Amino acid sequence: MSRPTRRRVHHPGAIAIFIGPFAALFTLFYLLPVAYAVWQSTRTVERTGTFGPAEEVFGGLTQYREVIADEAFWASVGRVLLFGAVQVPVMLGVALLLALLLDSPVVKGARFFRLAFFAPYAVPGVIAAIMWGFLYSPNLSPFTGITREVDFLGSGLVLWSIANVVTWVYVGYNMLIIYSSLLSIPGEVYEAALLDGAGQWRIAWSVKIPLVLPAIILTGVFSIIGTLQLLAEPQVFRTFSTAVTSDYTPNLLVYTTAAVPNQPLAAAFSVVLALATFVLSFTFLKLTQRRAFS
Amino acid sequence: MSATPSSTAYRQSPVSRTVAMVVLGVFTLYFLTPIWWLFIAATKERGDLTTTNPLWFSDLNLVENLQGVFTYGDGILPRWLINSVLYAGVGSLVATVLAGMCGYALAKYAFPGRELIFNVVLGGVLVPATALALPLFLIFAQVGATNTFWSVFLPSIVSPFGVYLARIYAASSVPDELLEAARLDGAGEVRTFFSVSVRLMVPALVTVYLFQFVAIWNNFFLPLIMLRDERLFPVTLGLYNWNTVVNQVPELRLYVLTGSLVSIVPLIVVFLLLQRFWRSGLGTGSLK
Image (tube, rainbow over all chains, first blue to last red; front, side, top):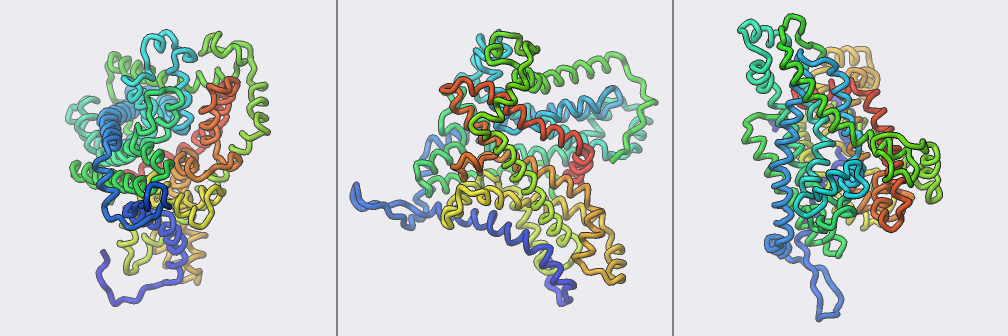
């Protein structure tokens, strides 16, 4: 917060030109939708008689009571939380491992590997899901030897098959964030450690990892946000697998509910989901006791 | 950014080198095999798709497949590609200019409410885009503007993360003395920004552009909700639509695969060309 000041603001015209357009659009397409969703979630549909015209009236927290009682919603939240609890650490662990390997003097051809690992990030989630859908299928896969034995698209495994798609796309991206922060560590830091007789593993563990922790936290926060919002990949997988239902993830449920159409309930789902995302990423930032955003 | 520790003086055991290279090799296979498979599949005749080695060429049919996929459905795929380029290419350009100006002003000018604006924008970074899609649809429906080009384009040109990046980068890379000197020369603030400051901010701006480009190119929920008219679809939504009817229209299978390949090639090219900006810019995002 800025202290109240009597000093004259210089160049108010220029400030308005610089900030005005973004502020206007941000208000229209961020703040207004958030406010609209909150307002919408307090509405409820009332009918006079069974076949009477539907009318939207103020319903207070009616929709939220429904959200709390909605088992499908909580099942989907539980599903993405389980997904995130496994997938995010695996993905970030692999990203960190690869970044450390690429940064270590042991490895030759780091440039090639960097590109190879980053390439899947160029594949949009929808396209990646279509590709992997084919790769998992028992008939079309190049690995039918495996896919005929293991049912990757059955209800038991499909969550982890989707996790693999997400991991495949995003490991390289997260690796690059961690890697670029490794590159910005000054060389003198290592020289001191080498003089103390530390080996590469020791340097990685005691010097590099602590220094890139802010980058890992940043990737962690974005991964948590992404996990709770899971939509495109499971939506695509519905073509390949009957195990992915229309309420498989919270966002799929929002989409299904909005299509009913039950806009107030869909809005209430969205609000609860956004709050949960915010609380979770905020808690994660606090727990790690560092500030990735400054 | 380029400071790497000198590596000549280290003695490394051959064992750890071998282990490291094996690990990297295995992951290379994991990341590249699906893309290789897609490429091979796109070169095959329909009949060969399931009957020949999926990871190696059979009769080369790539040109015919490309002709087929580009003309299928009255040439809808090229239209989708153009839409994607407009949504993502032009949209992220506008987004970068807006975010660059805003972040710059937040970094370089003192005025009441500055921190409040920045904090609200930072909160915007944490608001998931999918949570906005549904209320956006309802708002656009109020003014009868759903199922239009603008209903997908306009929400995409707002990048709170871009403002955040532009601000921290402008704060550290545009010296106040330079702005003072420009003022003494009589240059206006806006002109100074576009002629002097923008050049110093190029690495951050390219990063913002790339981030936003990928975000829009990958965005699925917003066009899924907003658009009914196939001719307005971005390529991801179009291919998704094809894929949902693949079981009823089996000849589409090959076109889905060929179309997927066509849709990722431009992105891979852009990434390769701009990769040095990626690295320097990503560092800016995570380390102040």
